[in-house]
Amino acid sequence: MKNISIIVAISENFAIGKDNRLLWHIPDDLKRVKTLTSGNVIVMGRNTYFSLPKRPLPDRINLVISDNKNDRFDGCLMAYSFEEAMEKMSSSKENFIFGGSSVYRQFYPVANKLYLTLVHKYFEADTFFPEIDFSEWNETERKDMPFNEGLGFSYSYITYIRKY
Image (cartoon, rainbow, N blue to C red):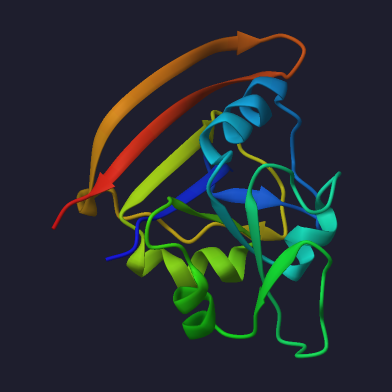
């Protein structure tokens, strides 16, 4: 069984983005994402890939899913379906589902771990994470960050393992 984890920052209303951009900039969260995903596989859709400040993200295997079979991105593994992405995921490394919303929706049922950054605020958005049924998950770690004046909100890092 492949080790499939979702890594995502969501607001209280499950918002994750607007106009193909993140809703916030949390430098500590970006460092955490880099630390967790380095040396592993990140799986993302093409829009998420194009939203990255640096492409492909270094020190990771970048697996990009696209509907367009002509898409080829330098330094990336390409997949053109959920099934092909599953086949190309690593059997030995952690595979991080990296977004966007349709990729999260497809992989949510098969993920066994959830690295959540929960932003304690409601945001107007056009892109949302699928509703999480928390009864399916065990919280294994939590770190609550205090209210940040510069950001205008507090947030929590929460790790969940799926109950089986």
